[in-house]
Length: 214
Length: 214
DNA sequence: TATTAAGTGGGGTTG
DNA sequence: CAACCCCGCTTAATA
Image (cartoon, rainbow over all chains, first blue to last red; front, side):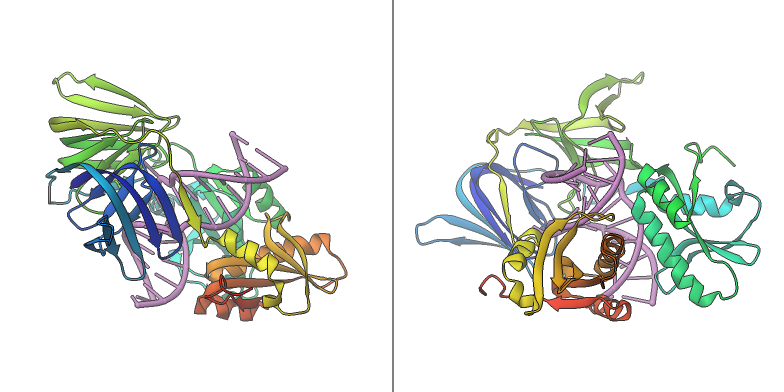
């Protein structure tokens, strides 16, 4: 990892366009070619480019230096006025990956194996079951009636709309039965609960200690 | 900006949970207290915390060192096995901000001032007009009939669902007239166009040289 | 390759 | 503070 301190400005053009006035900033270039440009505020960079980009240096007529990072459909130019420091930091090459836990995927898995939290009346119909509106997180059956369950860590009103899309799509496959929707989440936002009630979507609070429950 | 190289592992707990095995990484701590933990791959950090967090160092029984960053409802622990380098890089304090251009907001503004791209039949009803389902980007009127326009740079099927939500919400305010929806975008994805046709939502391709047009 | 949905999403704006 | 939505979102899974 190379860390350069420089007085610089920048222009990005690609998915959008940005310009950045002159200041002393840190430029970080990693082994894989990815680059980020930082000021002393926030963990996020001002400008950046992913590992696919190609670096080149050009010298302008006025002898100023421009670093160009070219991507497929975007490019970042950093106009270097003055470089103050330029250091190389060796880091481990081998990637020791980040392990995530408690994701929505884990919640889905756990719910699928612990149906009792839904109540006694349901049987399991599958996880990530395809519908005309994309895969529904969990499909339950209340007797013959399908229930589309949308699982979230934090459920905002959007979760209700999602559930309703699955309900509509399932109604085309399951006729003569009653298709309903449900939102299951650790954090049920009030506006979501209100909308769900209005739209006839059930709501399930997943207990915070779900991991501990069996 | 302080850059530390260390052999370390990490645990994050908060919105989600992550664990990170031991390796030599770079720890970047900025003036505002924000922190990020990097390996030599990708412009994005492995772990991070925003500027609100409080740093403290603790020494374990086995004399190992842990750096703790406490946020409101989250915390990050970095288990330091060995520190190799620790440097301080002075950057400009004054924030020279990033200027964005060509955002959706710019598109909205331009469309509002260049209604002719929609055709001759429309009159302007407002920008970011509140509805029961959030603000609609642009509201047009075709005679007395409201048209909810969802503006995007890139329009995926989600844009159609968004437009339909605004249409539903507007139907409660505008009775006895025909409320319809439209998606206006620079990049119309095929799946979006197909869904829009199916749901009776209009589609408008914004010309790529919109800036040049008057 | 394109599409879809999740993310420790971040960040800003509005009520 | 919650809700809402854009972002150069990024990233991972999936068809």
